[in-house]
Image (cartoon, rainbow, N blue to C red; front, side, top):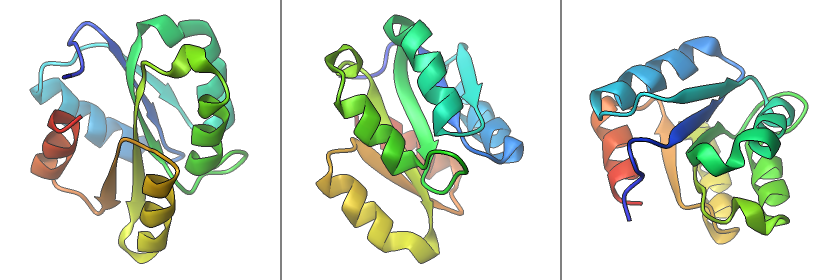
Length: 126
């Protein structure tokens, strides 16, 4: 089922540039509501407050304080997050991270560096 355009997308990456690039791609897809976090801790705080309005989380694997996979594990512990789709982002050098993430049940993945069409394809496949 596609992500409704009226749902917020939570972008989590310690690099603001990556968050802005993703936001630009998502705007081209018709999404207009964005939340941002610089790490998993900040993102989990946002999720606790805004979980009903969030439809998708796009998270970098490597971040300070709480990694993307640690965030996914925290989300899986609470069924109120079950409706939220989760895409992990990782660099080419970390392909083993993608295998781990998929085994743990993340909904999709994006390898860095990424192209807009790849991001769109991954989101459309959810």
